[in-house]
Image (cartoon, rainbow, N blue to C red; front, side, top):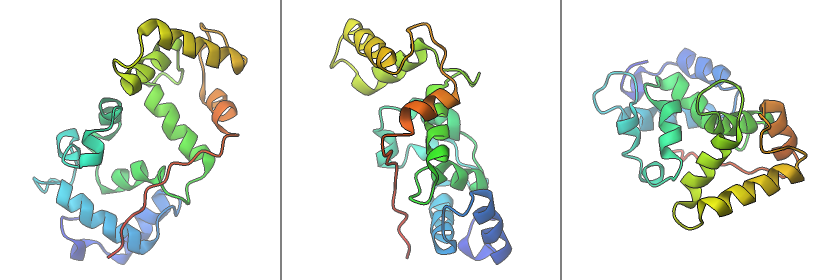
Length: 175
């Protein structure tokens, strides 16, 4: 898959569509490819974290440093798979898996209290004290039936987030 939309073949589009479990239409994939090519400033076929920073919405996101870990060096197929969690057609399971990866900063498949605290710190900045953050997290965990020393796994995230009508949707502009 080269650097211009004319190099994206029907086969490529179908392959990417299958790779992301049909969360994007063919027209949306073409639009995403055009955006990918704009972001891939050196035409290397990969997007670096620095190139992703050129997207204003991403640059100001309080979780951008965590997301960098997930996106640095993505090719087009991986780029679409990354964005597929934000599609209205993505399953709840897919969305929760994405959120879990954001929290699981070391990639060990477990989220500790410290991981939760780090994300909350990223989200709240200086608006609340460390003591308040710890108190809030402890209460939330206890309400969910967990303790401060619990290690949460993906199924725990499904249990917690699976019943709240989770919305994570981004519209892909189609030309």
